[in-house]
Image (cartoon, rainbow, N blue to C red; front, top):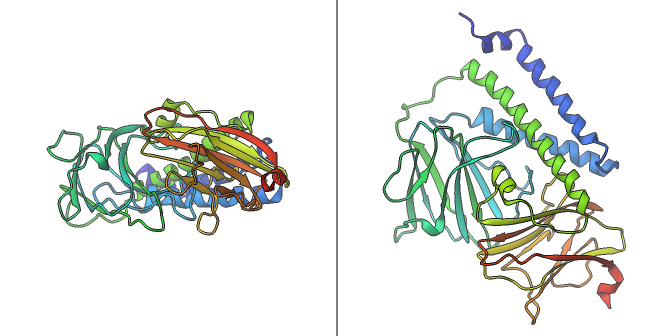
Length: 366
């Protein structure tokens, strides 16, 4: 008997529905609050293609929980949600009713965070955590190797919890200095998997097609809403609600300060941290309107605890503008007149809020 998924593939309904929904999602790029210029519009449509590419990785290419593959949902090209230049993001599919073994070598990155998740942005705009393990809690051998049991049942040694609803594993490898540090090498396997994967299941693919476009829809709507909301406090940096950040997959150790910036050609944004609190890490970055990090391969678009210059009095001043004013902590806007920005404070003993002000660019040269 033909299943519903098979029938939808055979009569073209599955593909037509996918294309129709894709067309509707494109209207998000033309929302009234979005800057109406060709540059922002082009970045917006490019953003859709990038997130769609990631959607296919998640829901069609690497979607078998019996044979999980660790891949990069965001990289130097595919970006969304204020992706962090100081993080090497990895992901793989899981099933909460299975057990997994994650093996790896520690590398030299500053830290690694492992987070199991029970939903995706296609499920109402959330990525609810179901378990967490940090590299500071890992038992690591003298050769730098480690093994983690990923299971809904408590395990001895290194254990990363899941719940029955767990769908995925998110890995954040955090750099202090991306150019000098080596990432951890990781691999994962399902404990009781069969010898080989099954052939493509038409029903599974049809469902994956629907979930991929739902993820695109949920992701784009969520972060377009964020960019709209951030415009209410342009050029300021208020702290984001920790529970909101946690619900969308934010690291529970991080305090997030998110906002919108807009500058004229002869203006600069000064972001000042009155003092640096005792913390594992902090960072500041600028993004475009679509919450994509700017091209950190070629431009300096962020500073962090290790790369920032600290004044003799303990303050940190960061300058955001298009042209280099000769400041030690200058961040370029890389051809953008507006966008979003993020300040992260990781595992801090106290929360020190950044202070912002817009100044004439010429005042920085005095």
